[in-house]
Length: 298
Image (tube, rainbow, N blue to C red; front, side, top):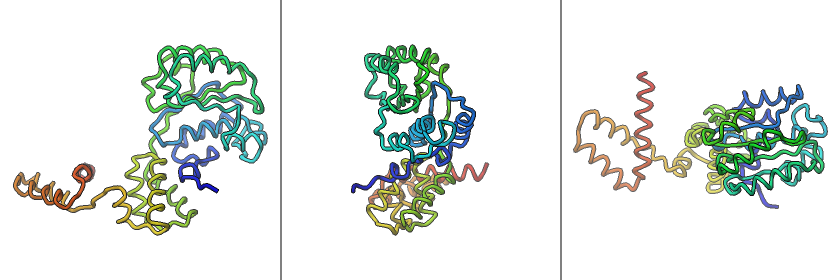
């Protein structure tokens, strides 16, 4: 049996499991409870923050046989399982980056009129919708203006400003924010405990910090570490994988800059280069140190 990568294995299966997006998930849960489901949603935000996962969960929730579309998906009925396993004919995921033409959207417009095969709603999840051409966007707009009652559109994008204002006005708009350090470390800690991985909290914080708010990136880094080093991972190993030097010479260089000591500054840079350290990473660490000083001073 083939193993799943962490970000797929630990993909949330209910809205309450989605990490760090409480304003969005709470609104969607309330909409399910009150049976006020919109015909079109727009999920926008940085990559790896849960847009597509939330779209799939919502597709399950509105079609769940157990909850009758009024609550979280049960994940046990036939429809929920089919959507989870990506074999449902009623949940169609389209990558707009590779289906940018107007003909692709015209084909979609013809198919939306067909009734669902098994589920209550046909759900179209269009990822990176900002990649559609202008003609394709206008064709999609026609469908969004007068959609059939059995169809729900969920559009996902990382660049909202590239989407036509007329499309934006016809969607319920949800912003997905970068995950906080606390949320990411909490999720990574849970994964490590379940997977039997021994790793220090400071190492998890470094992984989370390097992921810059993308949980998927953090989970991928964690899997890379466990694949290479096994189930016992140290801070030094995390630094090695991420290319973090942890070198005190970054602080030394800042001191030389403040003192306007050019010769010592060049000597420090030469020393770092001679040791084979990545100068770009060394520069990033120096900037991070300056940022920390600025925050402290503020």
